[in-house]
Amino acid sequence: MAHSRLDDRLDSGVSPYSAKLSARLPQPPRRTPRVSLIVILPENHVVSADSLAERLPTNHDDEVDVIVACAGQPIDLTSIQRAARRAQFLVAPAGTSSEDLRELAMRRAPGDIVTLVTGALRHVMPSAELELLKTS
Amino acid sequence: MPAPLALSIVVPTHNSALTLAEVLTAILATDLPRECFELIVVDDVSADASPTIAARYADTVVRLNGVHCGAGYSRNRGVELARGEVVAFVDADVLLAPDTLSRMLSTLHCDPSLDAVSATHGESPGVRGFVSRYWNLLLQFGEQHHREGRAHFTSACGAVRRSVFLSSGMYDEWRFATGCLDGVELGQRLHATGHRMALRNDLTISRLKQWNVRSVLTEVWRRSEFLARSLGYQRTRAEAPGEVVFTLSDALIPALAILCVVAVSAAFVTPPIWWAKVAIVVGIVVLTNLRVHRFFARARGAGFAIAAAPLHLLAQVVSIVGLCAGWVLRDAVGDRVPDAKTQAYSEVGLEMWPPVPRRP
Image (cartoon, rainbow over all chains, first blue to last red; front, side):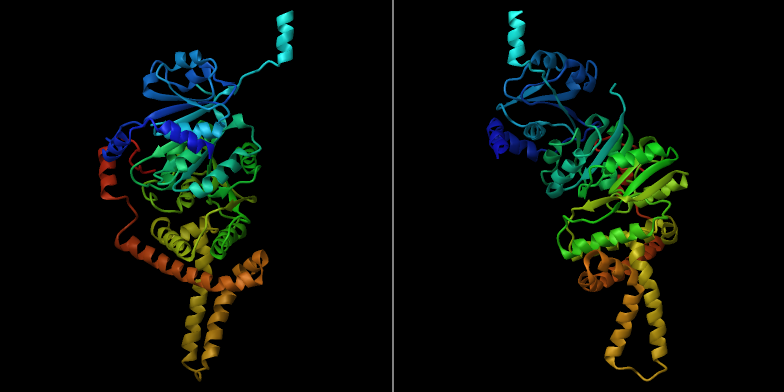
């Protein structure tokens, strides 16, 4: 499957020693759940800073792990970075499906509660309209 | 603050990787607009890929770690995050029709005095194996022949107003942490506090879970024991007569009574030949279960009904023994309680994640 190959490539950065060590160490009990927010951006999808801010606690973006999973080169990253300063970016090859991005990001998300938000389709202007705009 | 939604769908999972994708795909194929509902999957310490499969479809995935605490506990964690005015519970092996959720929602909207609505078990064309078909038909029989149940809430697929669910104390995660029948218990509690619920026979669900003889008998044992020990046989029979334990035990109790009379009478007459004895026993058992066997024959054919008779008899015997065990345990040990560690944590009021099971 395409996403498993992609996964292998992305997972290659994790040291096997550190993975084994973290698996062996007992997890200390937490009082509150760890929260992760996954933003899914398939090709030609964008997410507004407002919709992102809606999901994040105000001025406490460090309490939520934000992971942005994009297919191909993401568009308008500044709004995401503005809303969540410590966002992690996962860049998958262009054409990766939304479901595969979700699965990929889920494997990386450390949270006990993981919220997944898919971006909205960016309005792409047809080339004919673009030409018309340029000439007018 | 995000606006409240019409519906939150909570799916508890535990090692459900085989069926989860199909179940979640069916939920997302609902005829409700996507912006009207949210999908929350709560994974209860699965050892398989359930959380990652859930992430492909869900809006929120909750990963519980530590000890497996049961579906009721998972559903409660899901409702704590839910934003919908109505919460629907769908089990990880339940296949919905595209209009099931919208019809449940419209039932609650059309009748404001109704607080909960459940679907019933229907044909499960996807299920394979003789035992799975038998179990699904048995569940179907009880629910379809006892519509008068005043407190029957099906956890496998049921919707309840969130405010009512929260005010009633949610699922009993204290006594039913590792058990079943939590929906029947919730239904009893809702009924006791004056809330109305409906079991709709025109809303049917299919189960995908595969059963074998051992798992069916274990399930029968657990249900029977829990029912006798924690819920009360007579009370539950009056309030939720569609429960599978009553389908099994109702027929066997008169059969045993008749057999006792026959055995006593036989002492005063010339001993009949062995095949006559067998014929009398089989005849009594079949006659007392005639309604169930006719239902099986109508659904799957006479051959299936005949083949299911020995398994049905075995399940009935296990149910009766389970009920007796439940009564003995209730009188000798008392009601079900969680382990000592959970009780101690709860007593101290320890704040931790995942939370310690609470009393309703």
